[in-house]
Image (tube, rainbow, N blue to C red):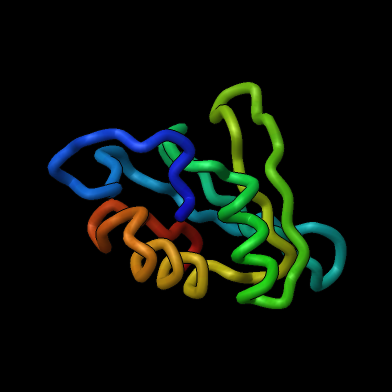
Length: 101
């Protein structure tokens, strides 16, 4: 449901490169979870909308000069976003790299 354009391939929507999930400290106890490396075949705004509803947090898509489009979610959502991306079929477990443990 997050595909922009339907392409015929054998992987059935699974991308080939790593997805990096990181946490950034803001001020005090506040944190940001960033997700970088999702294929451009997917509509990141739709993924963020689904994550915001699923995790009850705010989120956005920002343009990073080095990494391209990056998803930012409020709070520590590292495990939840990993399970979410795996369960909906965007990436396999070995493609998800969670940093900061």
